[in-house]
Image: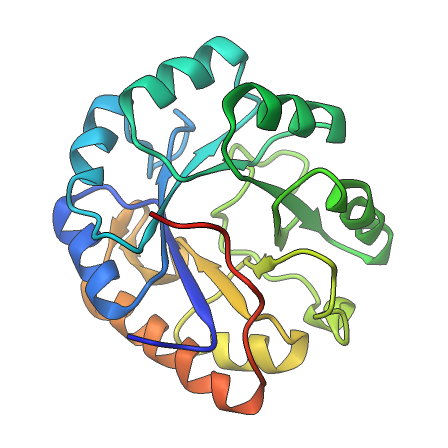
Length: 230
């Protein structure tokens, strides 16, 4: 389904979820390799899920402070198109991972206030794409997927960064249209916002989210260039 707003559904754990997300029009499907997450899948399961991903839809692997050995093991088993770095990786580490593994890298930036925006510039020269998410609380177990929203006004008028970016953080079928209008985001990411319980995606909510996101596209021009897909 063509759209001026691209959607990423993250934390998929079953073939039915993968198929539903692709059929709804999602352009990125995310697999979570952070063991503490309720959306965690091991590489063997993720490899099976990836067989259900149609051509033209990108597979994204979410990792948190992964070592070279862990990334090599993961990529040996799972056909990923993009690595999503959701930890405390530095710009130097992002550059190193790109060099070692030859895949596009999406770096997650946590935002709580205006002071956090400086990290966007720090990673703009090394990442292929940014994912702007709500900054987790200090005592949070998960680096993302907490269903938290940050002040979208912080991103108003910033849609012309020099690399593609996604908006995340507490998005739902009910609020994604407003989030897109306020931030100018051309790509959005959702995990908990389409779940009926932690880690359990709801096929109906997936469809509703994609429909709501794409319906908001009429207010904007052409979308940002996306990462290379299969």
